[in-house]
Length: 257
Image 1 (cartoon, rainbow, N blue to C red):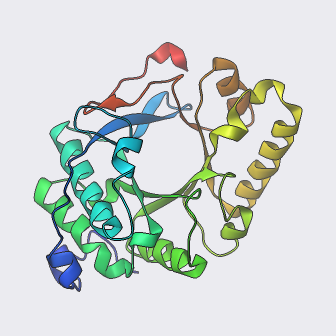
Image 2 (image 1 turned 90 degrees about the vertical axis):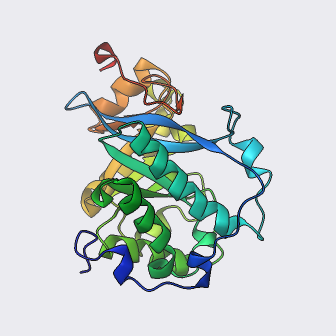
């Protein structure tokens, strides 16, 4: 296994795409939302969420993205998020979303991320790569290859929006992420929705057998949090704990736990 702490960016292969990233014709920044661990009543990580330079919603940025600039955008997002995290003195894990369709060769495309972490002084072992399952992946085996490559390099990985996208449980047959983030649609009013409860309990059993950790995202009500916590889920994210902070790291009140 190639460990990220043992192989520096300068030792990895590169290519013209990584060396000569075109300048995007628009600017963007990030908001950060905490991910908490109930058992320790602490912040485990912050997810970096793209925003406009004045805090505009992500949609105002995504409207500029197409097949001609998706690679540059994906790479620029990683660099900008890491830079902002260091400026904010982030010491927890940092969750970075990535676009599978923008990664043509995992070992080459990771070069920019490693360079940014080394340049700004962010610990590589604190990076968690999230793939949004809601994005239509053109080549499922390509996604599996990306995740397996990242894991082999020592990075942690997660599937975002699990239960809402194109792959579902089938994806878990091919690779093992560290964390699965349950989609908000499954979480809403879970404390009074018996059919959703049955589905969640089934997913919990599968993850227990596969030794995967579950994270419930989109928590807005204390009742949702308490029901899911009672089922053994330990990681949570959502407005109930804290809204994303634009270019800031929101704290979580201890009474929320």
